Image 1 (cartoon, one colour):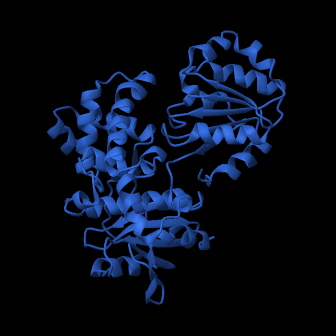
Image 2 (tube, one colour):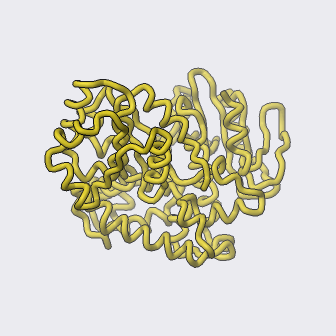
Length: 386
């Protein structure tokens, strides 16, 4: 059993808010974590809203939930019964005691707009992603296997690469054929699968809806809608360009990444590290994996973007917090070298510090404020930023 980094955050929120939402993709470990939280509070009441027997208990939700007002009530897959949110608001307004409800869902707050609107001021949101390097704590030799398989618990813990790959293929099918339709989204699974595969081949590239729509045979608004669906269900991350008035011609389109490297590799048919090493996506895959680790581990006050100008200045990730700017350049190399564009960007942005994240065993400085750091030690590096 691995300790989840989010556990203390949920406990703190339950001490302050009547309701806490734990959101994230299916199979990321939400149910396991919620049951641990409930056990620490004396057991609580667990309801799985995908189970008919539990759903029937909520035929009169106000009456049923009122009977259990003295204990933590965990409701899993809460998006299955959106009308619950109005009832929860009423119950909370009658008794605003903290730690009453822990709601689990497989969609973003934007997709679960009923929760964000009905429970505004009464609920705290947390996102549970698949495992990250701070939870796995991989050795240098284990790191590439973690990158290959991704962070979903059943993928990472599978007995073999083939079993891990088979699990991820099944996850993709289930997400397309069951999860997305459960939100009332009516798009054929085969259509979304083909779109998802196209995005896998474009992983880490600039988003161009018109070009993708032309190749896909639909309109630009339609592919934008497909993109929004995958983003709202935690399958995809958009990295925006840096917004700055520097007198430079900046790239204005976001970059698009599949959030889990294991799912990316499954969509591309990459089963082993040997397959990955010879694949054209290897560099972009490593970049996306490191981006996701940073996005999960860095304090939420930091805003992430990328920097690229028409003249060739570029840094993969810029982290901003107030007046502070930190750069991250990602290299899949045991001896990373920096090009002219990196140094131009350093000069343009006047960065406080830049880190070169690479699969190296130990870090070393490249200049006064530029340091190569091992990917396995990202959690420690990011903690020091605060």
